[in-house]
Image 1 (cartoon, rainbow, N blue to C red):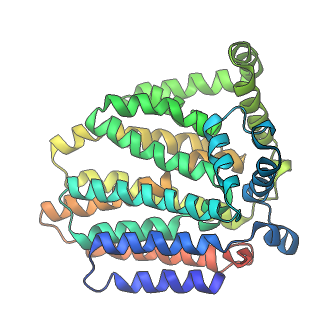
Image 2 (image 1 turned 135 degrees about the vertical axis):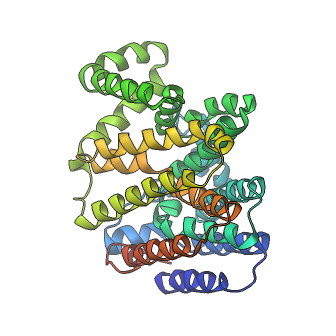
Length: 368
């Protein structure tokens, strides 16, 4: 699977140097990555390589749903997840959930990029390049192994873009369904609720939240559990699990290097995207950009707990290609050269390749 995935990435990377139709390019990439996900075997990955993923547990949940039906108690705090996993018990192959989940994540992500590209009047190659950048920096193992959280993240970014740029009331209402699919997504909603157009306000809110969360977190949950015990008890147990990093394997230096490289690239894009933008564009995107600054602030401040750090930074896999696309278009409209920006993108893609394909714990553990 490692060799096949590498070949797919190389082929689609080379295709960018030729004339491409964005719809066909992105659609075929979604299809190929989804079909490859169908062959992933989390059971073999666990017993042969010691790699545990959520999909290993979800396979068992699907089997239990087949055996006991609705009497099987699972995902009670996330009814949409329960329905989602329960649905795949209707089919004989458990691997179908990995393929569909990959299709949903990449399909939603590419749709977001395509819609933003069209709104910015971007050309075909720029949108395709942004799509390839997303694929390169995204951990494919997490997409097909974690299932629920990546989908929730992609949906949130799409809703947030509609909320921040188009002031969509429907997007604000749909936010409420995200925690019903994955309780962890509530952190995105909390971040959105305090994001404002003035960064000073956001920084002050960050300080207050940090004090409340780290000093009175148990008191907060005791109050919340009295309103909805199943939902918030599950959330509390998840937070406790993530807070205790001994529950997970030790992070390597490469994880932190790759994280901070992405942070630096994201900061560069946030600054560069405004250099040649119109005042109208800067005003209309201020809320969107401020949320990204807030996300960076939270994730970097959580560096002592790499699990929370990475989960807070998850939306970056979409924010980076979105800002790249917008940066290229602002440069083009201002009549400036874009060569250095494409060159920097190639550097980031090259580093991502080395990170995911060049280490024994990366994509080498992907198994058919």
